[in-house]
Length: 225
Image (tube, rainbow, N blue to C red):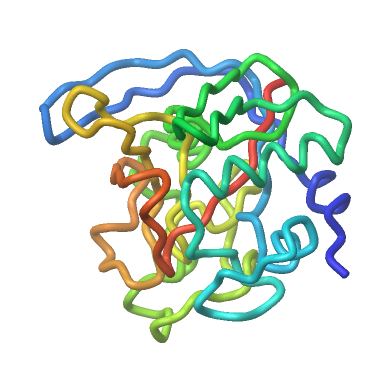
């Protein structure tokens, strides 16, 4: 049986700060103020996902491998379920008929990080695109043997976060560009099948929150404090 409580207890306290984001598609940069928050040390693993939802969606099986092949919508449903189980306030208000999801970042429940929080936490006080040598910190095309691996097997960043790059991409809460892409949501970090150039802290991708799932995309939990 998965120890969900142990996973919750391993949330890392991320200090306040600032991060400069860039969108290469539109050639724009913007700075974001980051309030203190909590971020899980590891991506959500398959045993924890199964314990809470009863589901085993992943293409690669293993209790301590990151759960993958989950949509953004399934990830936020998981966040809400864990919040309820833990006696916390749900961050997502989900209208199942219209498929509209409203996000309340100010309550104390579990949620996905914003992309600004994700990049800020990934860099962990540095300005580099990676927090170490890629083979030391990430599973990617050059060393993954075409599969995911147990979380925490590579070196963490300066704030004790593992697998921020490689292994699986991670969904973020944010809509990418509503005017151009509608409800598409952002994911970050690179995955096991990406070339080295894809596994950097600044890389941004997006896809449909309900229709898109793939075997190199998972998620990590955050909480507002």
